Length: 266
Image (cartoon, rainbow, N blue to C red; front, side):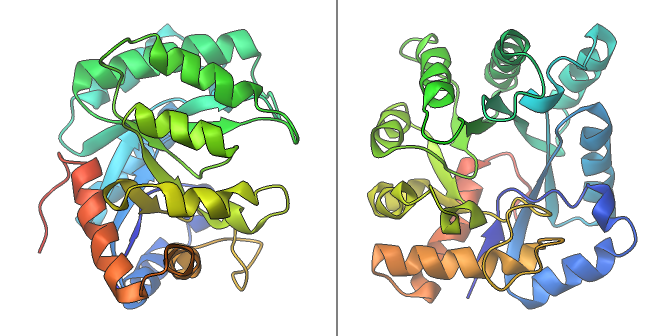
């Protein structure tokens, strides 16, 4: 099966000792595209370094909601400068996290707005994290409000590691977003994702690991790796009533459509 991993943090320190082996295992599993997103300045710089070492990877730069209160003006200027770099195909990971709230919500909103504005300025999609506390949807509603504030021309959005109710999916799709599914779909409380998986138009569908996090069934819980994207892809094929081979070809096409500035590959 042809595979992609549209969100994979091999720039995390858990991969420092064996990133070559991890990426080799991904290739053997059929993974043809990997996007490595930053979550702050240091991780964004590491993503760029990995793209230089492994030419089949792509990078994104941005500030995660957890780090929203930690990035000063000088650090943000570095993110802005990198946004124009041809190695960078998207802005993020950014978004809102009202579950753990590692940065105050007002700081998260300010951070999200500047990342979205940068995505528009750079002409690149924004990779959006969005989590609410269990049983709530306030982060999803706030994210929708920020996207709608752009009016008829919202930034292109990748909804990373989908989480939320069905009507949230319908709303982001109306705004033109692409939706990515991760191992989160296998967790209790995320049952709506099974319905959403069948709702997303075929051309706006992605899959990811969010390595080293969100291990799907069968993967080591201590460190998820890009090769395990195959588990979520198989789940997605089943939910959509298609074969893994047909879905895999679609996913590769969708990755190239979602990140049009990525380097062309056979």
